Length: 393
Image (cartoon, rainbow, N blue to C red; front, side):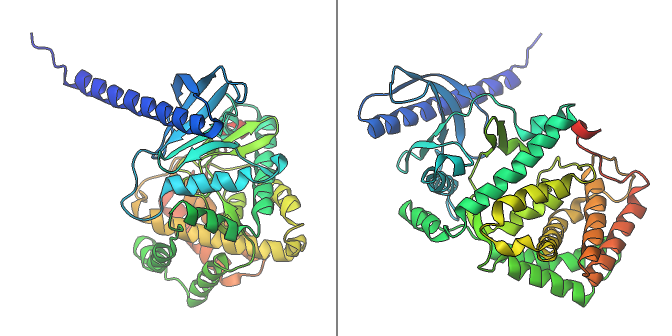
């Protein structure tokens, strides 16, 4: 009998490459720490933290150093991108920006050391604490609610503490040789594609007034007001729930942009995350209140309920519009949708947009969004409402 060992061999090759990447990360971490502290630093017991981005992420124990904590996290970017924004530069600059702030304004781990030559970051280890995703998928609704409110407060504090720091961010980025991240061209193109896509898949023409509202929302997202640092990746698996509040991780796409782009996630919780589900009635409003309490001192205009609601609805419109452009073409509209599906998410998001647009008298948007939601629901069946996260079922 012949035994096929090809899969085992492939697994061995993969494991070997993984071990080499971990070893390279540890070596780079030791090198930058030794230069930073002026003496040899040894790291042992590396644990692969399985980062989802381009970096190798490792937790390692520090051997006999009075100046350092027992464990540290190393992020090593071995490969330099051929073009465009450099995720190492974006993340290094993001952590530098926060490490320069007071500890109570730092909504992320502290940057211990970094090196542009070795393309490595050494970060404070926040420990084996649960993520926001863990809280949402557990069965404790009170704990999940507290975590969500903490996330909203931390997001607001992150925005408030970095408002007016765009020049600092760009200066740090230039120092590392990284081009500023910009998706203006691709976003414009995506926005232009949506009307044809909606007509093709749902048979609904987009009124001119709705297009004008989308254009206004896009221009508002690029305006000088309300700009602050954004992690961009706002998935709940990128947030640690610590005793000091939620802390943000993974700034590979970090940039300065309108804080309202992030705040749209208070209306569409974690919509960019493929596994996004729904929150119970009142939760979104409570999160908005928690976020506003942190930013209103920097942006007093948000003390006015009507002003805030209008800005949030404009950002919600743009977020729904862009996700529709990205994903409507790939949705399966020929069968009944499960409550945990992306198809069900689209029904819920368009329906919620119709409601919120009605509140702020964006009548054309409200009526159009209701038509889109109804057309989706007609194709996807009676159970096409997005399910709650398990913590709230």
